[in-house]
Image 1 (cartoon, rainbow, N blue to C red):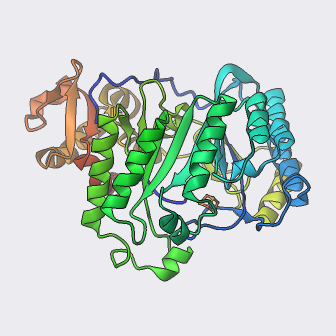
Image 2: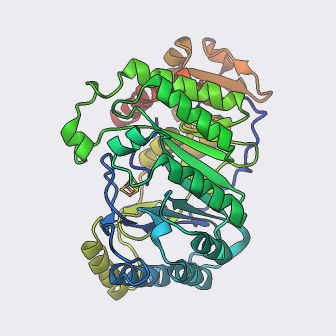
Image 3: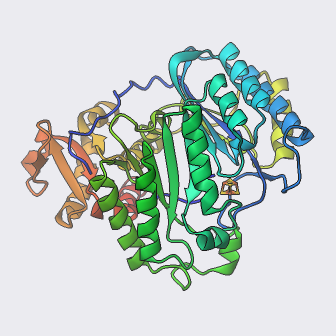
Length: 431
Ligand code: SF4
């Protein structure tokens, strides 16, 4: 559902979920449900278009896919711990009949186990679910929903090829609240064609008025293979200019923080206590299982992305079954792990922890990172934080030992994160 890329700082008053030590053994799983009624014009996700007329309750496509998906789960080697987070993404997971969702969760529980209190999130789209469906999902274990709002203007929803209207958004929120799912997240997109700063402000205000626990704001990236990619040239009208999208980013940070949301990740805001536990696993570069077409997994330092079409995915699961379930792909090198830790960790408001990095990658490597980032601290994009939570002057070399964390500033450092990350990438790939 998140067919766009994300493009944030908060002091240590931030309520951070406790950091979990990385063991290489996943306690999280992403499950891809690829079905959508139609393809939105900005979307390059691995999906399977059902059309408007298919009855989800009798669809053999859905039935067969879930069969193969459960087979993949059952043949995946169990590495040891029950799951603490499960995320149903898509696609449009809310096109799943309840019995299919129950079947997937039962299969996961039987195979890996699910801890009591696990976060079980599901992406849902306005206009795709009924009260009975939601009640069924909730009964099956779903306790967090992420609603794909994107914009509150019918004209912008039309421009994106979304199949819902602004009225559907409010109906969806009412249904979610009526069934008692109390952990709600909304997704919004900035930088859409024809979108004005005033429209973006209205969408932010409308989202704040709903008072969800979590809000994700993604900045549109025009992917070449999409309808948008064929129609629009990045940087050209009717796409907003870079200056306007930067203003949109700053406006979101300002409005959402004033409304009590912590900007805990470059594109994500949460009320205290409502950060997405599942997504933190990605940003902390911890392990996770992935199941389903196009899903990525990171298990024992092996990253693997499944085939992106249904036919290829089904054939791959067949081969995997014959091979006994083990995926054969190279492990990440030490440089891969270092770069991933930086690229992902710097997306978080708290940034990266230097003592942990020294332990993992050595003093010299971390000193190189410090030296590389000094230039950006002069620009106000990067800052060093001491153990007391106060900023430390990066201009003084001897301050290195006093630093606990390095992080991007909010909003400017986050806005220019690509430049900072490119410098780090160059530093370690040109050695
Ligand atoms: S709902 Fe739209 S954006 Fe989301 S996965 Fe389907 S086609 Fe892509």
